[in-house]
Length: 270
Image (cartoon, rainbow, N blue to C red; front, side, top):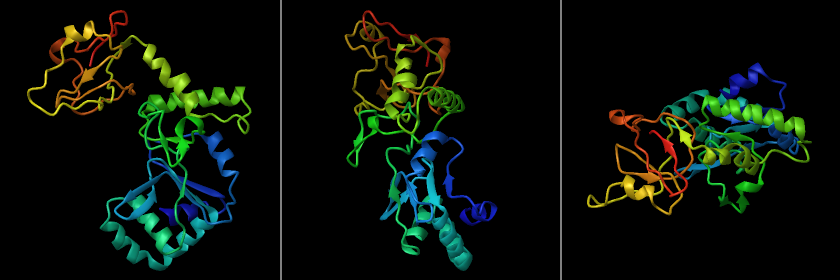
């Protein structure tokens, strides 16, 4: 893939590889890459690991400079049979690429967290702080696992953002996406076909009390809750509209929804 891409576009300065369900901010991407020298060996990505091998997560998107693409393409031309056999025994192509870059070309992955993200904006914990970097404070370059509607929403949002701001001085950050796209979902009182992630509480004993809708209706807890039918899994995260195996939309033709809060009733269906 690297060699073919380089053959098709030999004059490009940067090469970005993503999945089909990855949204990329072209404005922030260009501004960010402008800080690097494409004639140097750069391999940028969201860090992940399989076994002992670190690599740039493919779904988040990874980026190679022209120099890195050139040397990687030459390496594959010389050792194509070896790498074809190596890749056939490995389940992650992005990890295979990292192995070649690090161990054959001495090009380790340069961490691009939290600019590049492995989940959609509706799946993130905005209080997260990893590698001494606080998600909230950084520009957004990519989101993975984004539905078509989410990609469209982000595209329109970025278009409006660039019209109102000098993006090299005030780039669109994760906190802006949360405030203007994610947070308004909390205020919507009727969510249809809504899967809310539900990974906060996983009861482990058969004797655990099942969800009680009457109790939830008068609870002081102001969170709306759902549960998964394949297994009892409770949670209160705000999730994108997305069908997932195991979730039932309208079991037995009746709404299944835990309404939380005396004065904050939320109506909807699973």
